[in-house]
Amino acid sequence: MRSFLDGLYRLALWLSALCLVAIAVMVGAQLAGRIVDGALKLAGLPVYGFVILSLSEIAGYLLAAASFLALAGTLKAGAHIRVTMLLAALPEGPRRYVELFAFGAAAAFCAYMTWNIGRFAYVSWRFNEVSPGLIPVPLAIPQAAM
Image 1: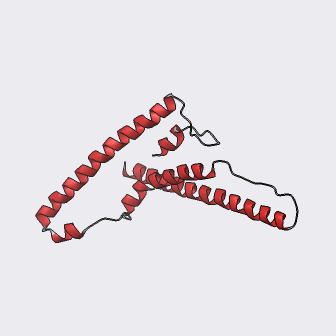
Image 2: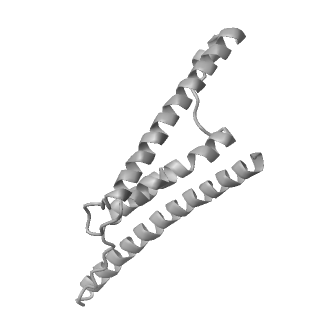
Image 3: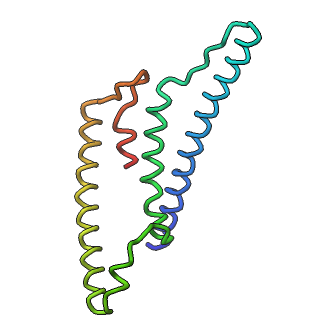
């Protein structure tokens, strides 16, 4: 089971990285299009007008997906920021109970949010909800990444 989860975390980290690369490529292409248009305008030639429709909306979806996909892998690697001032000030016995309470509260919160986000994505899929931008993206796709 451990090797399966490690592989799943690794896959999620790669997908997260691909989301960030996709953002960079799209923003770079949009920027290159603007530079080419500016150069054409300076040369007195007609501009091409290269535009990636709904770029900010799609980049936002990709950024949210990258953030959520990277959570498990970074938690396993110990790369999340933890506030340890309170824990360092407590003796061993009470510290363990405070950590158990914090982990239990976090697990309950994660279970609650997972259930509700899953239900939210299902409702979006069931009613074929799409984004209000120029490109109608089915909302269940970015919600499923969460």
